[in-house]
Each structure stands twice: as C-alpha cells, then as structure tokens.
Image (cartoon, rainbow, N blue to C red; front, side):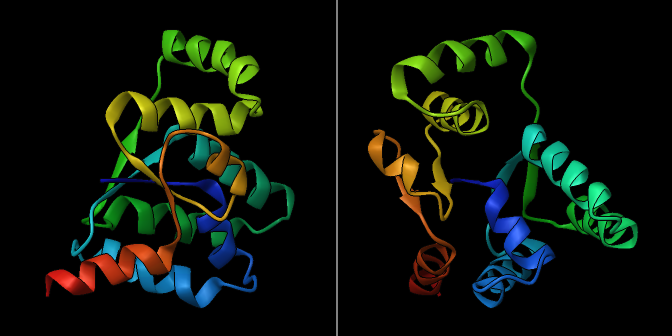
Length: 140
C-alpha cells in the first residue's frame, strides 16, 4: 500500500516535467485499480499553493477528483501524531512536511510515492509513479 506525496499531485496540477507519468497513476487511482492514501497535510498544502497561485478552479477540480477517486483514501493525522512527527524530524533530519509523510508510512507500513530523494535516507521505501504502475501491470 502507498502514501502519495504532495509533489506527485503538484506535478500534474502545475503541469510540470513528469506530469504525464503522474497522470497515468491518478487515472488508475480514480478507477480503483490502485489504492493509496493521501495525507490531510498534503491536501492542505496543495490547497494553499493553488489558492496563492489564484488557481481556484483548478483547486475545485482537484478536490472533486480526490473526493470521487475510488482508489484514494484520506489519512487524517491527529495532534499526537503530528507531535511525534515533529519529534522525529530532528532525529531523521527531515523538514516537517516530510516528517508527517514519514511518520504515516513508518507507523502504517506504507511505501511513499514521491520524487523527493530525502526519503531515500530513511528506512521507508520510496517509489515513483512509474514503479507503482509497473507493479500494477505485473498483476494483470
């Protein structure tokens, strides 16, 4: 099972270099062929980024897509979990947003889908969208 990092969503929303690869992953999440989590922290971060960029319609479309995707599950952290993530951030040398993602993956046995190489310095497994797609294709 996977946790999708913020940068994977932003790749598509901001039409960045690897948007096509990420879009293919989202299509599989949308129809439920792949199941993954997204943290509430990631969603809030994306909301702030899109709002500040004055991309309100994009934000509305994004939230509707998240709501309607059969394979996306939202993971809400509580205050105690966030406190643990802050404590971990000093030990594992990650900033807070990465520490939240790390904490969720570590405590729930998830792989992180991310382009962020900082996770490679931890014991959680980082995969990229193409890895997830390739794994799903093997099952077919």
